Structure formats: structure tokens, C-alpha cells
Picture 1: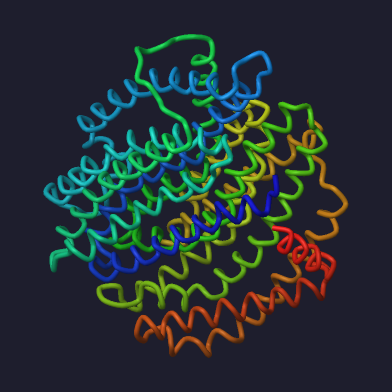
Picture 2: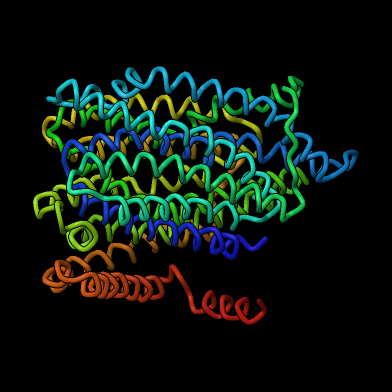
Length: 523
């Protein structure tokens, strides 16, 4: 498999989804602003968002895909039908668990909201009851997105990566329609309609995956729960993987709850909007790489191709650094013009923009780490080791909690994002060290040569953007067209400087360009 080509397929659709997500957030900022209504919705949205990351992008996929591939590749089995049979067995246990979980969460919505928000800061009983209502409206999304992850895992294993990557587009389109068609002068009503839209989007995503599976010859039957060795092994792998794959999300959950409890209204919104900008490269690069690497490495290891698996992970790490380092530098240096262009109008004022940019700079320090987690953990999951990542995730979560408590008072809304970034960096260091110690990963000569040069090229780009961003500031407060052109100029200039610096430092050579051109003509 061509790793870059597969990443481009997944990453392109993920990029489309993230761009729609930014459009959604811009409309949300315009109609809701930064205050209690926005904080209440974002708290309610945090649980489904975390669950999506844990299941659709993490734990379930990490456990299910290697087992599904093993069934399909088993020479003594029946190929794809054996894999589908295993998927039906998994569904027979997963579906009733999801139904019970949904009912319990609806009943326990009050304490769940209390846990997620820390009780908020200075709210009335009626305000907290409204936050609980929003949580109840979004809870059905958890079950729906879990079923989506099962079907998406099957399609990913069949190399139909684009179908699952396109599903989140439906979430953003649904919420955009709700904002444009059902917004109100009262931010509370707009926030409520957004919560309804979250669950509606889950139903649409499930329908999309069901139709895509049928189009690819995969039809799932409902059956009575099956409790056999395969299902037990799947569940045993999922539980530790949930914490291992979701360390960043769990850290964000802790950060959000502490911020909601200790900081002024609007702080949760600043952190959320900053995280959304930070999530753009994370979604484009990290999730795309994780989606492609896991089935690729598990297939190579299943065929005894240890050297090929090592090569795949080295190239995955190289791609991550190539794309992540400039993104992190750009978000740190140009956070204010970016936040102003996307969010700075309507109810979202200049103070809100400045606070969001500060939180973004803190988050972006850890951007390489967030993505490297996605690159390194397939090295464990492909070998069906989900316990080691969970140990490291637990350590990083403790570090994040301590960091929050230390930094939130002096740094306010910048404290939680910075604590999350530092905790993620610790997680990556432990994951990398153990892979190397076990002999499962060795940095090859090409990566050792290019890594430092990519970092130098990113620093050069950052210097150019630092001096050039002032030229763009007058234009990021105009019309949508003017804002868009200003951002396009800023991004294009950054990309051009980075490309020149990468070639000048030897991080990317002319031979690489010639190879890319030959591959493009061959395709």
C-alpha cells in the first residue's frame, strides 16, 4: 500500500470535515458567543466528542481491526465471511451494552454533567438544569457513533478508508443546518437546537455506513448475544485501549471540568475554540495516519513482514514530522489573526479572540505529541498489546491533573491547554522508549537525517510569519471573502517559506520531488 496515497484519501476527507467544522464553529461563535450558553453546550458536547475519539478513532478500532484482519487472512478460514461472522458476534454483545449504557446515562445525566463541568462557576439551579438537558439531548450520539465505529472498522480493513473518513462531514453539515435554520436571538435556544442536532447527525452517520457496507458486499445480521473466546478477547483488548487511545481526550475532559469550575464564564469556550483550531492538523494528519497505519502494520505483522512493518512506521513518523512541525509553529505564531478571521464577529468580541489565541498557543506546543501518539500506538495495537499504552496514558493523565492544578491559577485559560500539551509529550516519550527497548521500532538513517532539518525549516517559516502577520491583521476583520483571502495568503506564504527552507536544509530533496512526479504520472 502507498502510505502517502492512503493518507491523502483519508486526510483529504478529514480536511473537508474539519473545514466544515470551522465553518460550524464560526457560526456558533456568531450566534451564541462566549458565555454560559456556549459553555453549557460544549460541556454537553464533550462526552460524545470524547466517546467518538475513544471508539471511532481509538479503542474499538484498535482492538477490532487486527482481529478482523486476522480472521480474513486466516488460510484455514473462509476469508471475508469469517471476518463478517466475527463482526456479527461483536455486534451481538455490543448492541445490548450500548442500549443499557444509553439508558443509564440518561437517568444519571445530572451527576454526569456535574462531573464533566465541576458544577460550573457561579450558576443558578435553573442554569445547571439547562446544562443537564443539553447532556440528555446529546447522549444518544454515544451509542450511534459506537455502531458507526464497528462498520467503519470493517470498511477500513477492506481498504475502503474514504467511506468512514467521510462520515464526520454529516455531523458538521447537520449542525450548520441547525445554526442557519434554527438559531435564535436567545443563545440558550440556539444551544439547545445544537444539542438536538448532535444526535440527529449520529443517526445519519449510521445510515451512511450501513448503506456503504451493503454496497461493498457486507451485510450484518442481528443475532442473540454470543459469548465465545473471540468476543472475550475483543472486550479484553478494548478496555485498556480506551484509556490508551483516549489519553488526549481524557486530559481535555479534565482540563474542561477544572476550567468550568474555577474560571469565569467563557473560559470553556476559549479552550474549546482553541482546541478546534488545534484539531485541524490533528484530524488531517494524526487521525489519518492512525487510520492507515493500524491495518497496514497489523497486516504486515500477520504475514511475518517485520522489516516492512518497521519501514511503514518510520515513514509514518517522517510524514507526521513533515506536516506537524510547521503546523505547530504557525498556530503558535499566528494564533490571533487566525482566531480573528474565523471567530471574531457577532457575539464573539476582540477580547474573546485574544483569549482564544492565547489558549491556542498553549495547545499547539503539544501538537507534535498529539499526532505522534497516533503514529506510535499502532505499533502496540497491531501486536494486540493494549495494556502498555493504558499504563502510560494513566501516568500522563495524572501528570495532566497535577499540571492543571499548578498552572490554572497563574495562567488562567492558558493553564489547562499547557498542562494537556506537557502531559501528551510525556506520553509520547514513554511510548517511544518502550517500542525501542522491545526492538519493535528503530529510527532509520533517513529519519535521523531529516528530522532535525524539518525542525529547522519549521523555525525558519515561523520567523517569516512572525514578521509578516502584521500585514494581514487589518484584513482579518472584514467580510467573509476578505477574511478568507487574508487567511489563504497567510497560509500560502507559510507553505512557500517552509517548502523553500525544507529544500535548502536538505530535509526534502530534488530527488524526492522527481519521485513524486513519477508516481503521479504512473497513477
